[in-house]
Image (cartoon, rainbow over all chains, first blue to last red; front, side, top):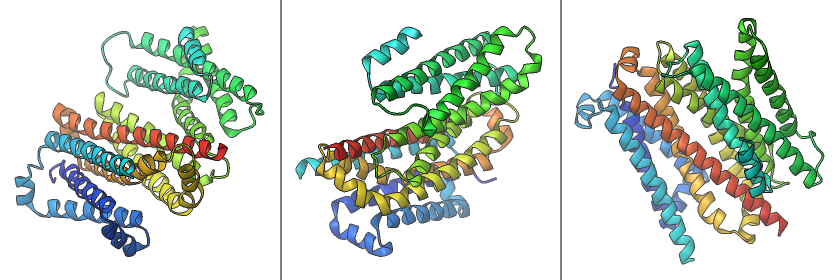
Length: 105
Length: 301
């Protein structure tokens, strides 16, 4: 059996990268436009990118023992804490960025 | 208990009071279900007189449901709305009837053995009906003209996903031999509800109806920040939710039963992920309620 926290690790990586994409596309109109051009709407593009990131990171972790070992994927406690921290940080980051933009406008 | 209901009713002479009493009822039914499951040995029994706790929480739950139903009727009369015509009202009546059938025989009957099967069946069916009705109540708050079956599906799926998460949480917290199998079923159900009901249905509604019908109303209304901050954040934060649900489901699927029962640290890790998912569902519910309210306020201006 693969380390049980593989998918929790993968979710943490996906949410971190997706959060960065979301914040960047809110800050850069050009990036937002290019995301919109991909599928017709930036939200659909972000959703599809999120799914692809989750599948890719899960595949990478499942396929490589060395990556799992170096990321300590066997430690479910560590990665569930990381998932919680990354998600809350990204939520706060998105809220802070949107609030700052609203106040500046 | 009656003081709490009256206090809430006096403090909030609006639908907020009704919603608050329902929220307390939801917490009480979860407690009653958990203690009921402990009595039957489905989940691990905690120390103390569980039967007493189950009976007490059942009575409190009944009182709050009756209070909430009466409150809802009074609010409808106050607003000049017809009573018990809406599906939300009819479901409320069904809930009250089930609660009466649950509580009164349990207190009156001396030999409850023959009644236990029905009591268990009604108890377990009460929880989803109550969560559906609560979600329907939230949907009723959506501005007229912007209501659609997709918004309703979005709201009900979220409510049922929250219930499934509570189920997973209880199975992990009070684990027995069959807990992992049941937690897996609950997690598949939750992942399906979040992906199909919340993500796809909600996303489709956001792309096709929200931008043309609700967004302009909120932006020209008294609370434009609701769209600029709350809705913009909700649409993006929401993308995280299916990932967390998928991760939880797959992790439970690959989890070894012996490790699940034997390692408290692993169970704590799973509980943390389930808590995060529940927190996010509740946060998104709150954001949805704020957006609905801003839409309604915008149409009234």
